[in-house]
Image (cartoon, rainbow, N blue to C red; front, side, top):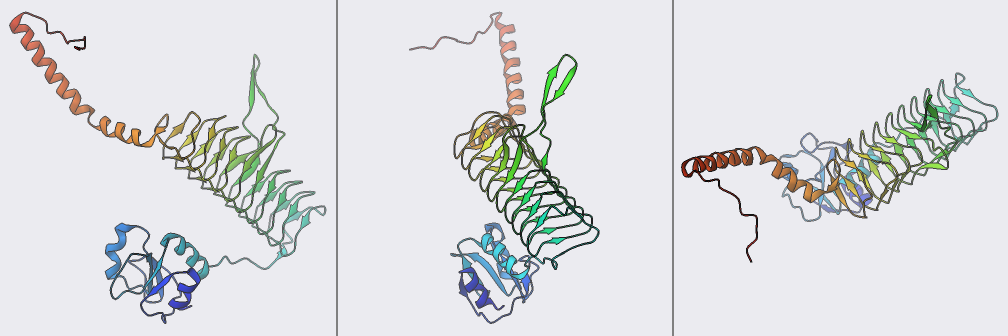
Amino acid sequence: MNVAQLALRLGGELIGPGDAVLRGVADLREAGPDELAFVANRRYRKHLGATRAGAVLVEREVSAPGITLIRVDDPYLAFARALALFSPPRWPAPGVDERAAVSPLASLGEGVTVEPFVFVGEGAVVGAGSWLQAGAYVGAGAKLGAGCRLMPGAVVMEGCVVGARVWLNPGAVVGGEGFGFAPSREGLVKIPQVGGVVIEDDVELGANTCVDRAALGVTTVRQGAKLDNLCQVGHGATIGPHNVLVAYSGVAGSTRLGVGVTVAARSSILGHLEIGDGVTVAAHSMVAQDAPAGAKLAGVPAYDHRRWLRASREAEELPELTRALRQLQARVEAIEAQTHRPIQAETETKE
């Protein structure tokens, strides 16, 4: 499509000629005349003048003489939509490979693709247009909505429910055993995990991410949530709508996250907590108590992000403060030695 057509599709304002044909999307500094670029971060605006891109997605207030611009409210969002236009997902032709093991009592919707070595158990339901890639596993009684994609090695265990348009990246596991044991004199006694898992519509689980089966009730990942690679969701937890969990983050059992929560990389949230809507947890943090809506948390244990930043800056000054204190102590001791009188700090406040 040409630049003018793309601007129309994205709801942007075209600045410059619109007849150049675009064939893809590339980085601002590498894009050629037939490629679209974008600037979502202000620090990269300095490279606009040198770009060879056929057009650049920018914010509404940006100007760049001699460069064809498409002004939009959110260049990053527009970039995502443009990339989907130029590189739509390519799903294979429907059909069941003869090397797959599909129970005759399973139900496959119209247009389902089942690749080699996939297992679909008795009573399982796979929604229309879904794609089960090599080695995927759908247990007995599990239900997948329409348009799902299970990549190689992805697993949906028995009885779990997965909504529409859910993507499970390689090695993701839905419904593995929750981690529950009761101590006894003889050792640890396993607590049967007899609950389930519900994954709502438009969720994506990254590679090797695990959502454990509840002991009772269900573990839930709500609509539109996105979990990066190597995330862990404990039994009975609830991941709220449109949450983002970045790589290596974990949510312990029975904790409930509200709407639009972001948990940055390598962070953990302890069990049985309530995390309010819009909470942000900085990377490498550990949340040990309930958090109100809108809170921004950092640290171990996590607390207000701004206070944590101040404390971090002050911590950097500790070596200098320690040296200054030692020097002051040496001066005090020298004065005491000369005067033969100890110097005592005043402890009473004068009115």
